[in-house]
Image (cartoon, rainbow, N blue to C red; front, side, top):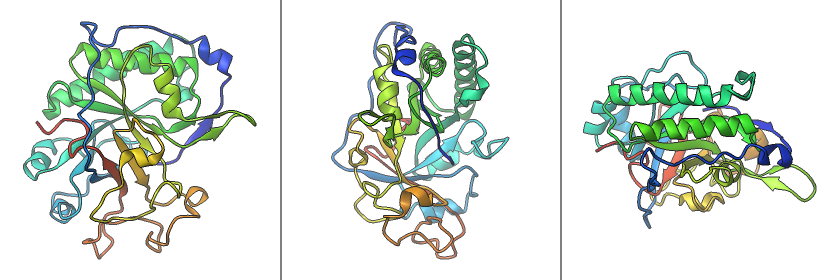
Length: 288
């Protein structure tokens, strides 16, 4: 997960996009994992680091990101067929699927159509990998700010498609405030939540600005996801590799000289990581 693009759309246009479909095939709202008073450290990266790396990672992390689709930086996913190995090694999961960029929607009907298509693809991949029903699949949304009506329609179709097959919808999105005017700021996560039409999304938010982020800091006490400024966040990506200098200038001097984060036992700086924290050791509920 890499760069963020900030988009700005009018409130009037957004209001025109309200869609009210049911949450699940049987009309019930799925429940998020029970919150914990303890937080757990995890990581994500686009490229699978190799089996041997997890002997090192287990000393620090409780869960790992897991790409069902190609990540934003690639054309294939290198994580396929690794669930059983990671589960046996004691890792929980943040299951990820790449979301569409806005430029991929050429007309209004593209939102629902491509949301349904991506949900079908994600479910097929999740089943093939052995992730059970009720696993949360986080749709990776790289764009920040207020989303367009067609993008909300895409998200709704994505969530409804997952629900029909017994899976649960999550989003990886910005939890960083974007200024729309002198009096209005918006979080992408708030925008998605306010326009969900009764659906319940699980939120894996990113905010690497200091504060609230502790920077590239790994300690025995993981920061709570709610410390991100998003009270309903299930998980928080609080540091990215490489660091984004425009947001991390006020962070402690705890990034490596090359701008990346590494686990403390990785003294050779072999595997650069994005750092995450969650209220459960298995944020996607996929290690069952």
